[in-house]
Length: 283
Ligand SMILES: [Zn+2]
Image 1 (cartoon, rainbow, N blue to C red):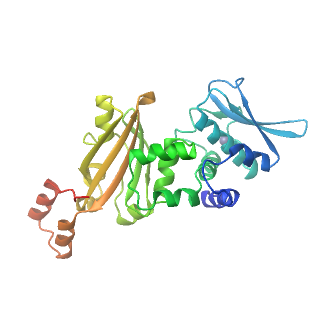
Image 2: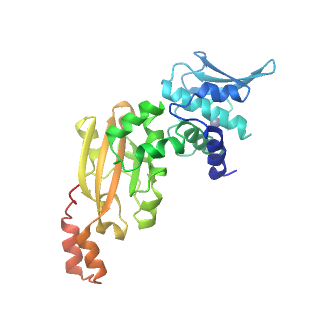
């Protein structure tokens, strides 16, 4: 099973839901399972599934953040509905769900399914149409959907027609980059590794402030050749736990450089001039 199939199954499951937040307990009950919270799970265990006396219980760690418990429950539901055996024999390890490197494919598919159920595409699309990718909107949508910032930001990008990308980092090291389909089509590849020192995320982390924004050149975030023809507006949220940063990037073609490209003028002098100082188009 691949991610697209999982997304299709998740969409089918939530298509009748009219408004957020999704009722996770009702979804579980609709499949004959029982949702339970427990404080007996270890601090490293977010959830598991147990069957007792013919009843299947989805158990989540009561000590986890409430949004996180909702995600964990749907991740467990995915294991059951998609018949993907759990690769975490002793339960969902709580520090893995939101840390992406080295996750087994089955686990990633269950995460994708959970995210799609928690933030259904048909409910988020009308809320992001014509909206800019901003921290204000991100925070508003986390409350509406009762889902984590990672979950909302990645859903925004997946459902956006704009040139946007979401970058999640911990302690200044990029953990995940999610570009929109439109951004991928431009050929701008947002690099991983360490946060750029000019970025809003880096600045917010260094200064220990919750929010920063920067008007940048796209080439600050991308080493792709085409990046010199784009500007990048970044809003960043800094969360002290694990020094997490959430970067919301919006790219925009720079009009003057497009003209130069169209004119076929790619002399060294002009290119140097273009990379020097790109004007940010007035919004
Ligand atoms: Zn799992």
